[in-house]
Image (cartoon, rainbow, N blue to C red; front, side, top):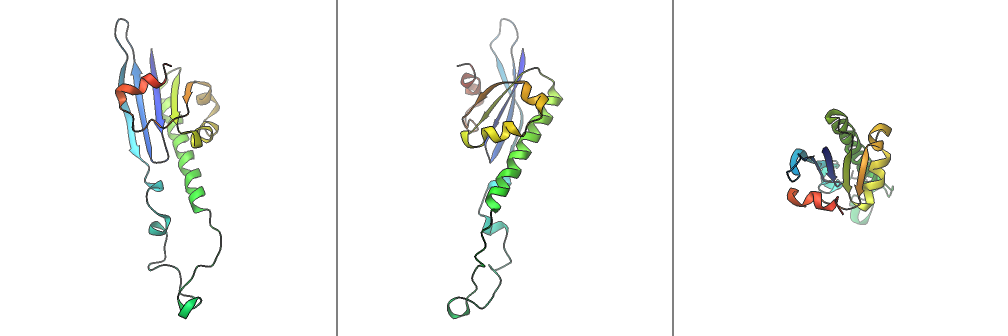
Amino acid sequence: MTKIIAVVDLGHFKAYRVSKNPNESARVDLLDSYDILDTHGKCTDKYTDAEGSFCRGEGKAGVATGSGEPHNLGIEIEKRVIMRIAKDINTLVAKEGYPKWYLAAGERINNQIVENLDPSIKAKLDKNVRSDLTKTDKSEILNHFEK
Protein backbone atom coordinates (compact mmCIF):
# COMPACT_ATOMS: atom_id res chain seq x y z
CA MET A 1 0.00 0.00 0.00
CA THR A 2 1.20 3.49 -0.79
CA LYS A 3 0.55 6.61 1.30
CA ILE A 4 1.66 10.22 1.50
CA ILE A 5 3.04 11.88 4.61
CA ALA A 6 2.91 15.68 4.81
CA VAL A 7 5.28 17.12 7.42
CA VAL A 8 4.93 20.87 7.92
CA ASP A 9 5.59 23.84 10.14
CA LEU A 10 5.35 27.57 9.42
CA GLY A 11 8.77 27.56 7.79
CA HIS A 12 9.03 24.20 6.01
CA PHE A 13 6.94 21.84 3.87
CA LYS A 14 7.98 18.25 3.21
CA ALA A 15 5.99 15.50 1.55
CA TYR A 16 7.01 11.85 1.50
CA ARG A 17 5.71 8.83 -0.39
CA VAL A 18 5.59 5.65 1.66
CA SER A 19 5.44 2.48 -0.38
CA LYS A 20 5.43 -1.05 0.92
CA ASN A 21 5.65 -4.16 -1.19
CA PRO A 22 4.91 -7.62 0.18
CA ASN A 23 7.91 -9.19 1.93
CA GLU A 24 9.73 -5.82 2.10
CA SER A 25 9.99 -3.09 4.67
CA ALA A 26 8.37 0.26 4.00
CA ARG A 27 10.28 2.68 1.79
CA VAL A 28 10.07 6.44 2.38
CA ASP A 29 10.91 8.77 -0.54
CA LEU A 30 10.87 12.58 -0.53
CA LEU A 31 8.23 13.86 -2.97
CA ASP A 32 8.38 17.60 -2.37
CA SER A 33 10.22 19.97 -0.08
CA TYR A 34 10.44 23.75 0.18
CA ASP A 35 11.08 26.49 2.70
CA ILE A 36 8.37 29.05 3.37
CA LEU A 37 10.27 32.32 3.32
CA ASP A 38 7.32 34.50 4.36
CA THR A 39 7.79 33.54 7.99
CA HIS A 40 11.58 33.96 8.13
CA GLY A 41 13.08 37.24 9.31
CA LYS A 42 11.62 40.30 10.96
CA CYS A 43 8.65 42.19 9.57
CA THR A 44 10.56 45.46 9.93
CA ASP A 45 13.21 44.15 7.54
CA LYS A 46 10.60 43.22 4.92
CA TYR A 47 8.04 45.99 5.21
CA THR A 48 9.58 49.38 5.81
CA ASP A 49 9.71 52.78 4.18
CA ALA A 50 13.43 52.91 3.47
CA GLU A 51 14.98 54.22 6.70
CA GLY A 52 12.18 53.45 9.17
CA SER A 53 8.89 55.17 9.74
CA PHE A 54 7.88 58.40 8.06
CA CYS A 55 9.38 61.47 9.66
CA ARG A 56 6.51 63.19 11.38
CA GLY A 57 8.52 65.54 13.56
CA GLU A 58 7.08 64.08 16.75
CA GLY A 59 8.84 62.60 19.72
CA LYS A 60 12.04 63.79 21.33
CA ALA A 61 13.91 66.36 19.26
CA GLY A 62 11.75 65.76 16.21
CA VAL A 63 12.73 62.10 15.86
CA ALA A 64 10.30 59.99 13.84
CA THR A 65 7.94 57.85 15.87
CA GLY A 66 5.35 55.24 15.00
CA SER A 67 1.70 56.09 14.69
CA GLY A 68 0.73 53.77 17.51
CA GLU A 69 -1.67 51.78 15.38
CA PRO A 70 -1.84 48.09 16.25
CA HIS A 71 -0.93 46.04 13.20
CA ASN A 72 -1.60 42.33 12.94
CA LEU A 73 0.81 41.69 10.10
CA GLY A 74 2.37 38.66 11.79
CA ILE A 75 -1.03 37.04 12.30
CA GLU A 76 -2.03 37.78 8.70
CA ILE A 77 1.19 36.26 7.34
CA GLU A 78 0.64 33.15 9.48
CA LYS A 79 -2.93 32.76 8.16
CA ARG A 80 -1.73 33.05 4.56
CA VAL A 81 1.03 30.51 5.12
CA ILE A 82 -1.42 28.05 6.68
CA MET A 83 -3.81 28.47 3.74
CA ARG A 84 -0.92 27.91 1.32
CA ILE A 85 0.12 24.73 3.16
CA ALA A 86 -3.46 23.42 3.04
CA LYS A 87 -3.70 24.25 -0.67
CA ASP A 88 -0.42 22.46 -1.40
CA ILE A 89 -1.58 19.41 0.54
CA ASN A 90 -4.89 19.43 -1.37
CA THR A 91 -3.03 19.54 -4.68
CA LEU A 92 -0.50 16.87 -3.75
CA VAL A 93 -2.98 14.35 -2.33
CA ALA A 94 -5.39 14.85 -5.25
CA LYS A 95 -2.57 14.51 -7.79
CA GLU A 96 -1.10 11.34 -6.24
CA GLY A 97 -4.57 9.80 -5.83
CA TYR A 98 -3.82 7.57 -2.84
CA PRO A 99 -6.74 6.56 -0.60
CA LYS A 100 -5.00 7.52 2.67
CA TRP A 101 -2.47 10.10 3.82
CA TYR A 102 -0.81 11.25 7.04
CA LEU A 103 -0.17 14.72 8.46
CA ALA A 104 2.40 15.92 10.99
CA ALA A 105 2.15 19.56 12.03
CA GLY A 106 2.82 21.36 15.28
CA GLU A 107 0.04 21.64 17.85
CA ARG A 108 -0.41 25.38 17.25
CA ILE A 109 -1.13 25.14 13.51
CA ASN A 110 -2.43 21.58 13.10
CA ASN A 111 -6.15 22.29 13.51
CA GLN A 112 -5.99 25.36 11.27
CA ILE A 113 -4.40 23.34 8.46
CA VAL A 114 -7.02 20.59 8.75
CA GLU A 115 -9.83 23.18 8.75
CA ASN A 116 -8.54 24.64 5.47
CA LEU A 117 -8.37 21.30 3.64
CA ASP A 118 -10.92 20.33 1.00
CA PRO A 119 -13.56 17.99 2.47
CA SER A 120 -12.58 15.16 0.09
CA ILE A 121 -8.92 15.44 1.11
CA LYS A 122 -9.79 15.74 4.80
CA ALA A 123 -11.81 12.51 4.54
CA LYS A 124 -8.69 10.66 3.33
CA LEU A 125 -6.61 11.81 6.33
CA ASP A 126 -5.77 8.56 8.13
CA LYS A 127 -3.44 9.73 10.92
CA ASN A 128 -2.78 13.19 12.27
CA VAL A 129 0.27 13.69 14.50
CA ARG A 130 0.33 16.97 16.41
CA SER A 131 4.08 17.35 16.39
CA ASP A 132 6.68 19.22 14.36
CA LEU A 133 8.65 16.53 12.51
CA THR A 134 10.23 18.74 9.85
CA LYS A 135 13.72 18.21 11.27
CA THR A 136 13.23 14.46 11.74
CA ASP A 137 15.24 12.20 9.46
CA LYS A 138 13.13 10.53 6.77
CA SER A 139 14.16 7.09 8.02
CA GLU A 140 12.42 7.86 11.34
CA ILE A 141 9.30 9.62 10.02
CA LEU A 142 7.21 6.47 9.66
CA ASN A 143 7.87 5.46 13.29
CA HIS A 144 5.81 8.44 14.49
CA PHE A 145 2.72 7.17 12.63
CA GLU A 146 2.95 3.50 13.57
CA LYS A 147 2.45 4.05 17.31
